[in-house]
Length: 148
Image 1 (tube, rainbow, N blue to C red):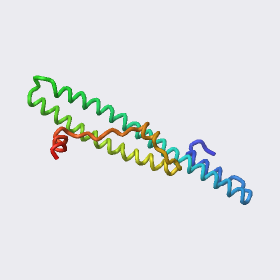
Image 2: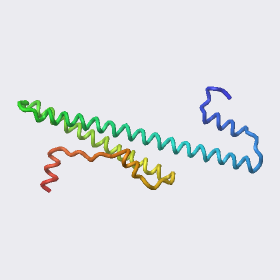
Image 3: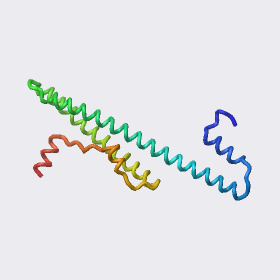
Image 4: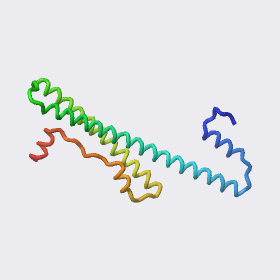
């Protein structure tokens, strides 16, 4: 085997050249394939969980920044122009936050689906480990919601 071959290719080569003992060889090969499938599914679930964790961390960071902008907006003596610029930045940040939140919701659903494909049915631990924050509404949207 050469060292520059990918690991999976090397495994396939070993499997193809391994001596077979009739039915036992087929059983061993089926076990190898099953193990590879389980490893791949577990790896996909791990990657989804990590991606979701990064998204949730970024959402927390964005939430902190939005809080800072909101406090800045409340400072007395701000010019109308500066207040308008800060509000525009808040609006854009809320939009970006909600888009990232939607992506996190999709990753969460993907993780649940992957867990269910493994046979896991309880997902309380996932809910606790990966809490999806609420959607953020702009102040105008909140007023429209209250009036409706």
